[in-house]
Length: 448
Ligand code: ATP
Ligand code: MG
Image (cartoon, rainbow, N blue to C red; front, top):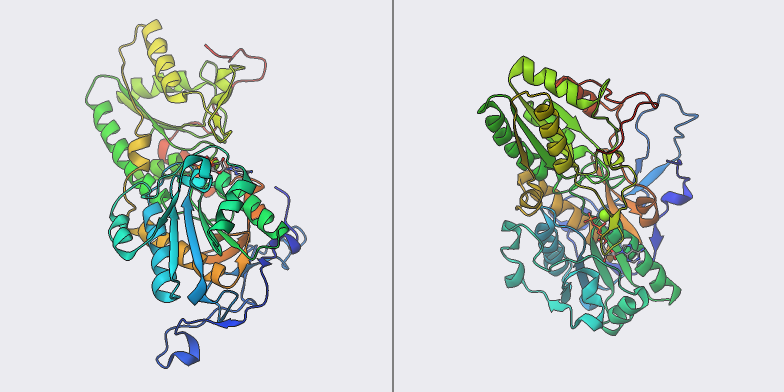
């Protein structure tokens, strides 16, 4: 990843902030309720100061928070919120908190929910606007999923912008992953090209925790918690049969944070595989012989595999893509299961192999306590940013502080789990698996 320049971290503004904030904060509040945040408040890009030559100290994110003066007159604002991509615990909490902040803290009169992602902004799919009310959102945070619905697949940016302008929408909140933020970036650019004062603010939704500059995204902790429950079940199953082997496939298309987090939380996993680290199956160094040894020594084994792991094992099999153009990974869980079954069968070693894929059950549950708090905070910071006329940005979470991150920076790359990180070293320590299960390049470790 290229180091950004100070200009890359600059936040785009719609113009002068002429309206006083209605929030009762700072000295004016009478009773002290905390301060407004100035645009001069920054958060260091680098906190480790080992080497200033490679880690310059002039890189800062703008700090998120309520501004004393606003670009928009809250009494006239029309806002909208859209949720796109896959489900993730906490989306409903975000929708609810965005609405409540707009309505009760800023006194915004009109807030709309967009049905089924960006699709709801294309009239070809019908009217996607729902006027939001307190009654509508009252209890949504108690449920998983997204009450507005979501979708994948592209919509023409100019058409979406036409819809937003026809509805006189001043600010759009886009809850979603990298694809959603690319769409938000495109919308924001198109609005500025037309000279429209529309704020587009992104809220990072990634159950995989793979959005850069977001130390922890909402939903990730819940996913790890649920995954740990699944692993506990897998462990019981594995121990409950002679030479029991249970393989659990967890989410993680490009990053192994869920697999690593659940492994260290559970301490019952014996092998964990993530997209960041290739591995082989066959001798001399591959996984299967290590698995055999583990089963011979201990009588059971639990294996966790992230969905994006081991894709190189499929060789040149053609890849499919989803409606949004994302690569649909080959099913590494089923492949591993079949290879494990074949390995033990060929050697006439008894093995009771089971396979669990809990993905849809994990991503659709309500947010746990931590994620409910996190969703609420992302949502409220997003509203503060939009009211101050900031646009083309995502709410980041950097060194424990909420910051404004230019959208372009977020979509330029994905966050991955470094095999040198303490998290991965903890996985190796907790599983006892070999650090590398890769054969020399000359060996034939191609697809079965
Ligand atoms: P996740 O992958 O975590 O489920 P995501 O936001 O990455 O979430 P996608 O389905 O990839 O999910 O994208 C969400 C929406 O954003 C889709 O409707 C997709 O077509 C749209 N989108 C993606 N890239 C762009 C782009 N460059 N311009 C306009 N729209 C885009
Ligand atoms: Mg994505």
